[in-house]
Length: 397
Ligand code: PLP
Image (cartoon, rainbow, N blue to C red; front, side, top):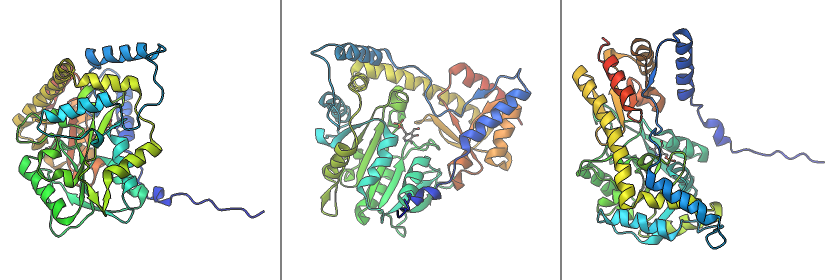
């Protein structure tokens, strides 16, 4: 019998292994083995640490009980999400004078899935433009599809906020504000420049707003749709992960405006078709919890948590400023992106900080070539640890 030769998607072979977090874990465990008496503080975590707020827990408990009754039981739900949650998201946008149609909102199990899955509706022949340093998902999902990737430099000169370059043409542009890993945030004028550029050259912007809830400055948009024309050129990805502690609970939403017409085709219709074919929706119980996030009480409670993280970020920023260390972020974002002192490389500074201050952070080099020489600190830890870490860091030379 003829033996067939199954072919794999060999684009996967072009993916680079990421050793960033495994190397960090290995170095920390070696250090702890050598110095068991030392307390190591982690400012490297990208996960939240505060528990779900009371209103969310209550809503999920009620939904569980409802599911246990004959009348309240629900099986498959709408793939795009229940009307009650879409309505809550619509009102959340309405408060910022952004009007959305219900069918423009797609409830997801988080931003990461949708950021990857959205690529299904675009041709492999498109070129993508991605900032460097970057949240690695944008790069890897495009490598998997075999798309051509162009990088734009985020660096000290542009405060890690790259702006459009008329000489560079790409079909799909990734923007993330507030940014992971840099914590940098675009203001209105800067985002307007990106929207104008995308409209001029017929590109689509994939706008990652996973950290929008951390924005406090009125001049920094929390949604790209605060910019005129954006509904014609941008898809927005949002998440309750960092906003409301849903990293383990899993819920987000993606906005695909009806005005997005490319190649004479509605992207909203394509995405709906993709979702109804490949996705069976977010659990009812989780969607009830997510709905509670948008109630007045839920908003009050999650804002308390965000305030807590932002205060941690302020304490870290203040210490770095006093030490004369260059950094961005930390104001409208949970991340602080600093320049390693004394021209140390990212990994040299990692070792130095671990050995001299017993603090763990994330080497910037792990997020792209422009991250070399930079370092990410996160404010998702607890207050006492942040204060202790800053006391220690300020004593190092
Ligand atoms: N986008 C950015 C920039 C992130 O940093 C993260 C998570 O760390 C995500 C998206 C993924 O969020 P989610 O938990 O909703 O999948």
